[in-house]
Image 1 (tube, helix red, strand yellow):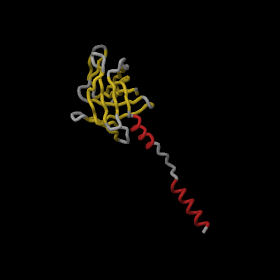
Image 2 (spheres, one colour):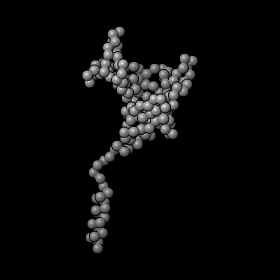
Image 3 (cartoon, helix red, strand yellow):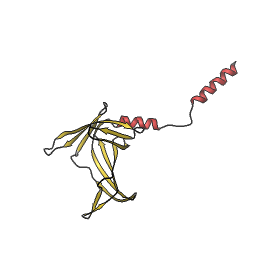
Length: 160
């Protein structure tokens, strides 16, 4: 009887252990938690592609004061407030948002607009949102406008 109980306990321990260390659950839960709060505009990097190859990169520094603030709320809304000419911020638009694709894609909509943009956190206070454009894409070098097939903007938001 002792051997049977001993074998049973070993098999329970063995079956409850897993060799796979699944860090994605922790990471995705962290993304859903990390996004909540107030963020301001940071630097933006625009990458232009033709025939699938990177042809030009343009970097834009963060502005001071920030051009916009983004407030992500626990109720699934986020509010964009933009800088006005009088130096104050006013609500420009309110979106409904959710995180999809294992919490690595920001889905948002405002009734007339919706989008799905990949996100990543470089640390707890820096959020990068990726946006791809394929219509009317041009870049300018030394005053010469050149068409491209697509543009990927990496917009950095910094936690307030």
